[in-house]
Image 1 (cartoon, one colour):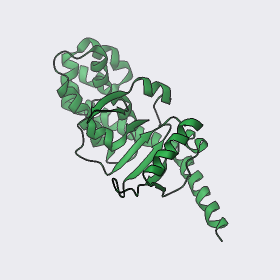
Image 2 (tube, one colour):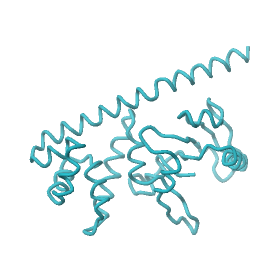
Image 3 (cartoon, one colour):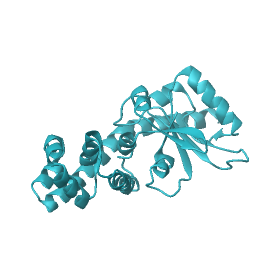
Length: 232
């Protein structure tokens, strides 16, 4: 499994704390059995629809639990198997970041994938993307790899930093520009156009996220109605 969401942002240095634990898992039967056993060890109970089932997870739903164990009372755990705009689990796993926490390895969603997963319709996610990318830009030093520079040019959401990165890496910026109008505007030295392009990107992704979640929300409401009808 891969840690994502707010806890991953904490590990990447873009947040100070998170109340929930968001996990991305491989939704095969063997893995889900192990996960269910771990949830039972945590005295975790489901708190919403849908139930934890491979079909719901593979379809893009999240399943939600609340821990009752003494070591983590009240901790909410949200579990998913697929994310809008990202690759399949096997690819995400191969690209993961592994860190050491008190001698134990913790696998995180890679920074680039975490950023993609944060492009939602929720207001709070966009400042987090900005902080994630700012933190990575300032912490990488002078010897950033070409791949890292491309990530900055694709995902930086701070106007001044994007303009500075384009000026610092003009050759790579020329390659990225055809796929990102904010980079094209930065190459042209038009700060107003950079700002407009960043805003347009955000609104486009918000709209895509709404389109993605609308049918899933309808499925959830159908499940809720089925539960209410069966309890009468």
